Length: 268
Image (cartoon, rainbow, N blue to C red; front, side, top):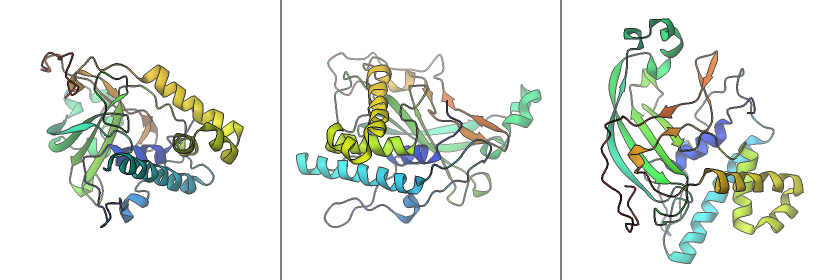
């Protein structure tokens, strides 16, 4: 794995997975807010580094998603998210456990940031399929979960909100912000035109990310959302000396109705 966390990729994914509403103008076009366009993170130089021209690639990712949304509106008369379009939101509760009660030897490593003070916090949770269209749940896809924790500013940030996004694949098939931008361009104009614009080598990387996601990570919808295990597909800094990946693992007694084979919305 590359020695970067590629925060721009993670940041873009969080915006797409979030339960939050997106403002639109009078014509129904999406309006990115100033907060969306400003990177709300600080890089850890030990684990993270910006690519040359990364801000340009982030802008291209944004523009690519907006173009996909406009195409969906032109074809079907409605705006979707561009990716992770089909989802369902629930209200949850997250407990930050006092690790010193069971693992004092690792408490110094784990009790950082939002994990430093035990407590319970409200969580807005969204389960989703990864595709940018509203498909039956039987169709092969990557499944995802995102959640926002409402927390005190002193434990999180000025907005009092911490966002997490995870997929049921252990790694993200797109390697960095440049490839993410190129994948979106390929999806919009096709690989031949895209290769003329960005070059054969970059187009091969983009197609590799698409193939990896499609052939390796997509699975039929056989397990309800709340029964699936999820991972943060890129690592994040935890304090100054570690980078970690997060995971959500369902409890053994987690309830789920039996899936109806003919129900196109059975995962929810």
